[in-house]
Amino acid sequence: KSHPHLYQQLATGEAGNSTVTDQIEKDLRRTEAGTSGDQLEALRRVLQAFASFNPSIGYVQGMNFIAAGLLRVLPEAAAFWMLVLIEQEYLPAHFGESMAGNHVDCRVLSRLTAEHLPRLSAQLKELDASLQLLAARWFLCFWASCVGARATHRLWDLLFVCGPASVMQVALLG
Image 1: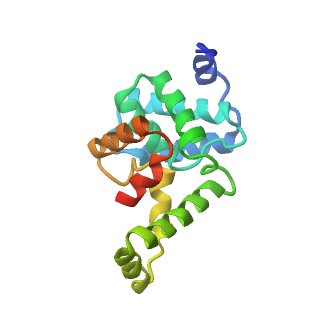
Image 2: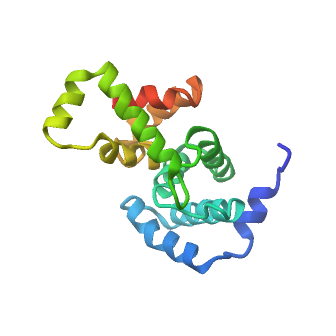
């Protein structure tokens, strides 16, 4: 509310970093088959606006799936602000060069799995399967590329109602 026209300014402003623009362009078509021209343009604007809004992060793969999912149910400006909220409150430090938040959350999930789901943890260990490797994608795309659209929206409803702390609970259910 304190910046009612900021999204419009960011979405219509200069593209900025050409490396970011190139990566967004590569990922746009990978996001979902059959995206129409209008949907594709809205997705491009939301991702470019986010990269301009937070240049220290820019654009990171996974954001495209989150933004596309948000655009299915929200107007464009609202989808942008929800992407900002998700990055800041639900997945802090997940995006960016070090991906420290993702590493931490994956390790926490691994420990919680060992504590609360010991049989699953033992089976993963027996298979030499890293829970961190499996779960990283869940966090980086906020489940949007891992489950269908309807299930994603139900998970998001749960997460947004229960708050950021529920991310780990959803991951344990995963």
